[in-house]
Image: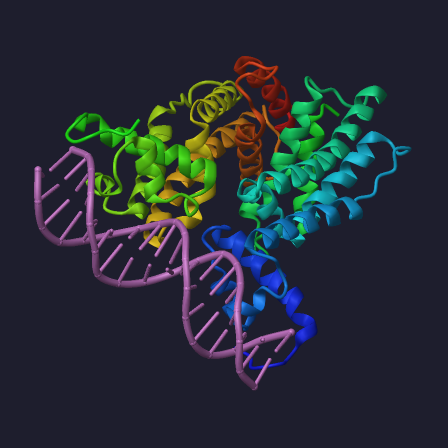
Length: 194
Length: 194
DNA sequence: GTCTATATTTGGATAGAC
DNA sequence: GTCTATCCAAATATAGAC
């Protein structure tokens, strides 16, 4: 696994990020040492510092990258019926959560490990994502196709519920992703009073 | 804050547990040092080892204690209508989560920091708790008062959703606990098809 | 029961050779 | 771009005095 001098310079950067993501998600930011990451990548510790200023920056970049990808990939059409938009959001959120479970988990767990400045920036991106869902719920209420006792709370409740798939879903389990989406849609549709 | 020799021997044990719980929940198990815990309690590091074999045992005891309390406090009457039982569970889970948010958060987050043996034991207790909810859903289906596409998945989805309150609830926020319970009850009732 | 002092390990980060 | 070697700080845990 370990490499020697001078090989694969151009791919080491991404490898560092991938290893860090996986290890941070699995064991927690503070539980993972730079030495572990280096060993996982197959380089020596010193090498890591050619790709990140320090450990904190590595975490911050991973979280920011994930949230920015999420926001960039999500597309919504306010002209569609709110229930259709909600179903799209649900599918998007579940599929993303299952495609990048480690990034999702990390983003929800390790905000606290960030320095205040970094934390504020990531929290703002997360808020932006939550607001995308809340806007859908608002339009559902305006249309009269949804009935919610408290829109903001419903937003948080739905996101918690959907993100929860990462806690129990197994690739080799009894349900495939489409089936999971369908089941969650039943639950969510009921919850929003449709 | 710091104490000197020989004072308050009989209360140091609980204080250690309280400090450890708060600090572990806030910063993560690996991010917290025994020195920090000692400083928070107001003793020197060595003293902690009169109350725990090591740091790992401290975490394991906190998690086990929380899960055992949860299971001991929860009481269910299978003779009641399933919807009433579900509402009881919901109130119990939300109130407990808001009364001991740190223990709840820790139990869901730091399983991974436990040695395999300890992890298995705590996971079994958690499973027992989940099964309590699943049994209620099963009886609702049998009664015909609930309609669920997948009972096990609904169980996990509801627990994720309810536990999510700890992510956003603030004591001084706009909603008191009873209001939160009422709002979640609306969402859950809809989700289970009642 | 608690303190002080310390052994021992491990961590993040840097310097300089190749 | 990567390695080797190393500095320095901080961590867990223990020993022995009071």
